Length: 254
Length: 346
Image (cartoon, rainbow over all chains, first blue to last red; front, top):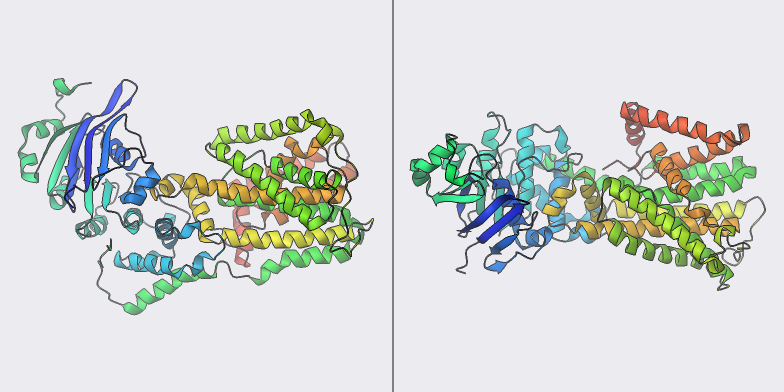
């Protein structure tokens, strides 16, 4: 298969007069490790929402391994292999860690369609969930409600749920945001050991993390791709520097 | 493709195994029947022998428990807030009544089945539209759907009898053998049997993977969408089942009251069942048992004290429960009840 894992073509989205995604195009090769950076309000999370189908694009295309997903709903795209984490935790807070992962696997395998069987008798789902939690060193917390975990471990559950979906493409929206530095290694460990088959796009403000993780960086400014390049190229790029130093670029204004 | 390679070396295999079985225990044991779950049934049977002269009230209470149970499935588990659940109670009541008066089919159990199907069809099609909405919009839409249904019944007065209702509903003896006595004893046992079966069904569904998904939608529907869950369909299915159970409650009401009027669609009905469920607590299957019993007995006793102002007492109690709940007094009580072994709130 030569088609890139993810390809987006001239993606466009406006809210009234405000254009939050303007003519965005790029492609991620299979197994790619890409970072998406840009100042606040550049439209990074919007772009993730457009890729996952949470938001509908006004124009443009989203292709996964060459298949056009643009017309598909968020749920349908998820089933094709797109998973994401959220910038602000979106967890089942009152449920245990095991139940959180159970739901991800149960929905992926359609076990959740069954309504005349005990949830505890779905041994295939339970075994996979526990193996998965074990591999992420979360099994100790499996029986605890998510809301009782420290924030760093909650962020880990956020990633655990997305991985339990067995995605082809994983979109990580600031996975380390809000995690105290004493716990950030938990997140870094998991991210650095992701299955090389999974294509990953990470949004992150922490440049250390970006440079350690990503082999390519896409810079988004005011809803447009400013540039794309290797970490060295990006760190040497004057325009990127000026954007991050907060200098207003008149030509991009509005 | 395995998304997750082992990260942590498998040190302390025993500890891991222990953690695994600890986590499993909750899910696996959750739906085992506990001794305490026999209490409501023992109480219901005891009431039959202790208050033989109150069995008319008893039967009506069991019907409201069933109605509240149907609401618990969607409100307590799926998080759907509605002010129009009387629609399906009413549909079931009219289906059961018309089956007898117009089609002259008076066997009671098939009457219940017919009511369940009619209410389920109503629940399915209204749910398809209603469940696209949430919160305040859903409240108003469910409320107005029920009002429209009521006026629809009023429009086809020849068929439904309008507000005068359908009189003279008499059902055939239970199993062709047991006749109905003036004290409501047969009716009570009939309602109790139906409630028992319905509770079993709802309990099964709640503890199934599907029930787990409903709880997921209640806890965080945005994440359920991101997991690829067909959220709308799940809600429609739950709503349809809930409507069917409410329809059975309505059918029991019709069969035991000999008269059905459009009053079954009243806003009061939707509000009362919601109050009962909140009084007893939503999301643990037995809220209806506690709440409906409390509500019906209080209503009966307060109406004796003051025929005009009995609702004052109910209102005061509801305020007390909601405020206490806010201040977690009731929460602590509820936890203690759960610790006794009732269904754990997932």
